[in-house]
Image (tube, rainbow over all chains, first blue to last red):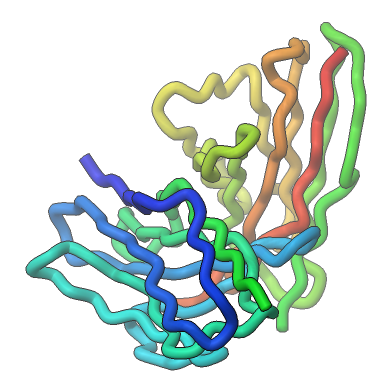
Length: 110
Length: 116
């Protein structure tokens, strides 16, 4: 069955430190993966998707099919990056049906 | 960017009553919308896919008679929680996907339902 796992509930780093938010997935088909971010008191918004291979706000994520991972990385964390991050998998052939990981709270300390 | 609006943001209702939540795509058409439920400190769980002009498709374990979905136009989907019970209290979030290939889904701000 399809599944998305984010092993860390909370990741706390100091400003300027590198960040890696882990995401592993289980899916038999060709995965389409996303990272969503939710800032305090705001709605969920798309951060990036693997097919576009963009870098948004300094974040990147590479799909590793061998390790079934889609970790989110940023070389130098900023305080404004503090938020809840969700990894999500479109498990229905790009119809938009998403299964979300449990979410990781990123806390960037000054 | 595209905007999806949910109404109301918060609602309190009595046990046994029904409550309707609206999800609107304000500046784009969305043949497909999605309804999620989020329990405290948990992830979002897909409840159903709302299809304009046809019946909604529900995920396994979601009671279709309990959670009625209507998608009467290309910009509006409604979720009605019927005969609400305290265990239906939750955060309900909708998303709407702009029609087209490989398009992004935009999320509403969510509705906090409390059943007393």
